[in-house]
Length: 273
Image 1 (cartoon, rainbow, N blue to C red):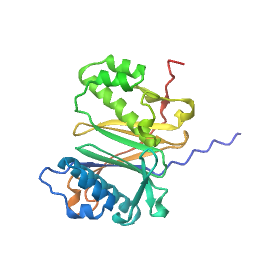
Image 2: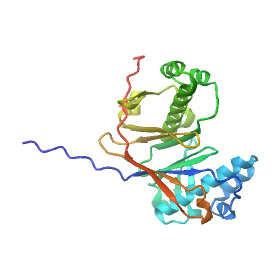
Image 3: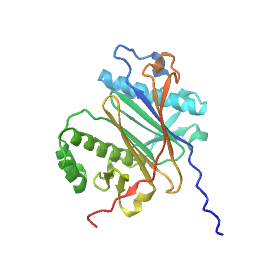
Image 4: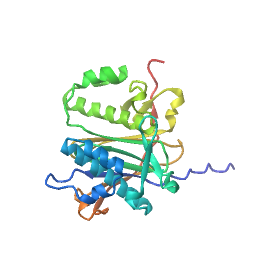
């Protein structure tokens, strides 16, 4: 009797942390700036739009406090580098270079993903923002995606556009190439029975990618891209922090939104082949 095929051990849960926008009457705590690096403080100083400056400072402080909570290393100690396309990574402490993160924010939400595997990407967008969706699709999406978008209208078109857009952003952030990878060089389709289907060039290892896209409160669309071995189970743990977490400048109150398996993405066949 043949031995049963061993089940691959799952990764440790991948944590996605969500931080809503602080109340409008909230002033930035001075110790937000205290945990930032000199470069980050200088970047914040150069941001002239107050709301954008608040978002930047709060997001960077949040990332540092998450790393502190994960490792016990104080928030100000962390130092970051960036690859040639601007993707950030942990430079110091050296013993935690194997921990990887990706950060995205809108005015109403900051999202951060922490994981042991390097190829992870997250994107959040204000999905209420009106745009000329068909025109953008014609300029940046594949013909199949643009056709799918043109086939719907109104609210359905808006939702489909942001699902495409956040997935594409999450993927190019995960592979670390940014917009040097054309957004029409890979594509997504949606099927009720298969979920997100992914099509890319052969050397992209499409079978190893997992994707999540979901709508959140405050008109936010979130997408997550992760590369993992096809046979390895992956669990996503999504947590929403209290918007007033800054009161104690600690991790404060949090709400666990889900602990769900992220299934292997279906592979879409390119109609142009």
